[in-house]
Length: 114
Image (cartoon, rainbow, N blue to C red; front, side, top):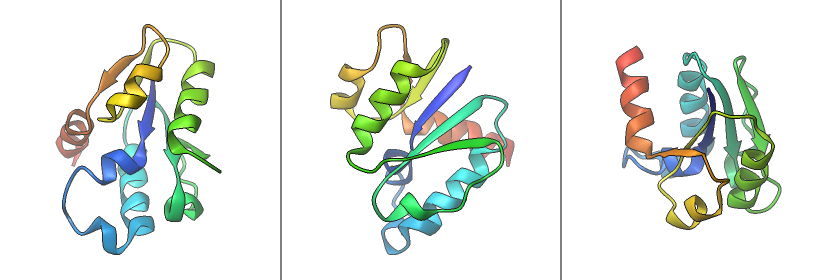
């Protein structure tokens, strides 16, 4: 399955101090995403846009709106497609047939791999 991840949304879902180091929190999440068997596409934006590439994760660096970048990526990915976000507005813009999961679903999967 292709798994498209709204990184800012996932990072922001746990109050673990991510706001003090957005890029660091993003890098830690990307390292964990590389452990998944899925084809992972991670969209990063803002201060986290300059994080290093991680083998096993295709990084999309949003130059504008992260939501716009996610929608564009979703339109170009073959199915089946899973999208990880809690953003209701973004969910409404995704292609028909995309399965949407909340950040908790993804974090639970990653925690189980640790």
